[in-house]
Image (cartoon, rainbow, N blue to C red; front, side):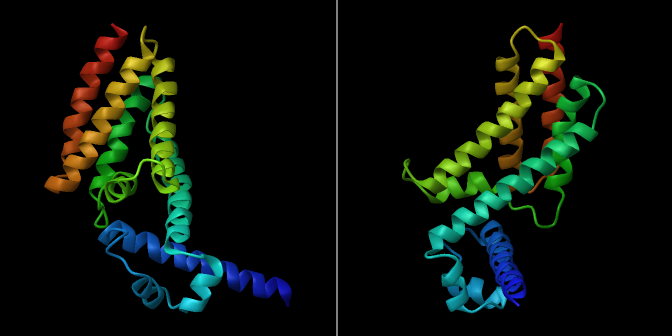
Length: 194
C-alpha cells in the first residue's frame, strides 16, 4: 500500500514538472502562475505545495529535469549523427535544425530563463549557466578529438554559433538558421584542422 502511495505521489510530482515545463517554455516563468499549472496538471494546489514549497522550488526542479533530458538527447543525437569527430561537430547543427522545426520550439529554456532572472547569485541562474558550461564542455571534447591545435577556440566559436542560431531561430521563426550556422561551422572546422 505504501509503495502505491509513493508511486502516486511521484507521478503527481512528475505531472507537475511536465506541465510546468511545457508552460514555462511556451509562456515564460513569470507569466505562468501556480493556478495555471495546477489547472493544467489536474493536481491540487495542496499537492503542489506538498512537493514544492514555492514556485522557485518548482522552477528549479523543472530546470534540473530539463537539463538532464535536453543534454542527453543532444549528445545522443550528435553521437549518432556522425562516425568521425568532424561529422559529429557538424551533427550539432543537424540536431539544431530538427529542434528548430518542432512545433513547440520556443527557443532555449535556459536562455529564456536567464532573461527572466536578473540577479546573478540565484540557484536558477546557476542551473542555466551550468547547463551551458556542460554543453560547451561536450563540444570541447569533440573539438579535441577532431585534431585542432586550439580546441578551446574552436569550441567557443561553435558554441557561439549554436547559441546565435538558437536565438535567431526563436526570434525570426526561421528554422533555416541551423543550416546557415552549419555552413559557418564547416568553414571554422576546416580552418582549425588545416
